[in-house]
Amino acid sequence: MDNRLAELERRIAALESGASTRLRPHDIEPTEDAVLGLDWTVWAGALAALGNPVRLTLVQQILGGTSTVIALSAVQGLGTSGQIYHHLRQLTAEGWLHSPSRGVFAVPPNRVDALLAILVALERSA
Image (cartoon, rainbow, N blue to C red; front, side, top):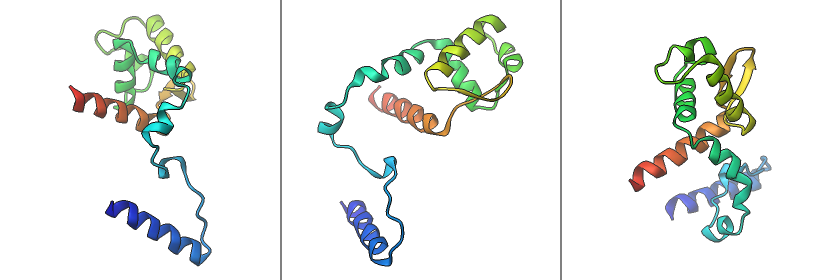
C-alpha cells in the first residue's frame, strides 16, 4: 500500500511539474480480473516453444553468454548443429530469441523479464 501511495504521489508531482507522465506497460499492475479477461490462446505458441528441455537449455546458455551455434554445439546434450538451428528457429519465431548479427543469438530484453518472472513463479510454487 505504501508503494502504491508513493507511486501516486510521484505521478501527481510529475503532472504538476509538467513532466511527461506517459505510462509504460510495466508501470501498470494488472488486476486478476483484467488478466482473466484476456485471450490466453495468443500466448500458446510462445509458451509451447519453451516446453522443450533443449530449448530451455539453449535460452539459458544464450542468457549466460554462449550465443553462437558453434559455441552452443559444444554444450553437452544440445544435439547437432542442425538440431540446434531447428530449435533456434522455433525460439526466434516465437520471439524468445533474435539474431543481432549473423550466427549470433540473443534474448530480447522484454523476454528476459517475462522468462525470469515465469521461472521465479514456478520456483516459488514448487
